[in-house]
Image 1 (tube, rainbow, N blue to C red):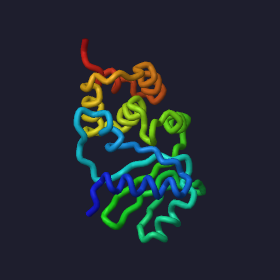
Image 2 (image 1 turned 90 degrees about the horizontal axis):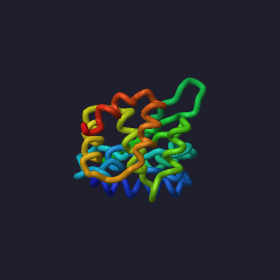
Image 3 (image 1 turned 135 degrees about the vertical axis):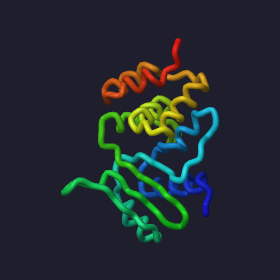
Length: 164
């Protein structure tokens, strides 16, 4: 079974070869900013469009499942096979497109990782937020607060902030 970092590098190259300009999101992106990385079983990317991703991955022997609203283009592709799990999400909102534009070296900024984690808010996402905040890393708190308010998760952001 390939290491998750190997999957990350391989799929970044595959997506770049398809002209998709992938941006790393999820646990691996959070790991760039946490006190210590945490285990994950998949690699997550955000792209502007899927293009020929499905066909290319199927030709390479992967299984690909997509999610789409009836009559709409797919907004996520789940790529499985050869010991890897890669999820590729299409930026559908103004926020997601802004996060793509703000990415640095193909990875979400710390602010956008925080916003993504506030939206998901599973126990592991709350842990990611707490670990990132515990680093004391400077970041644009106003940006996070603005998007938390826009997404209706300002209460989560308030709860995540250290008292004092």
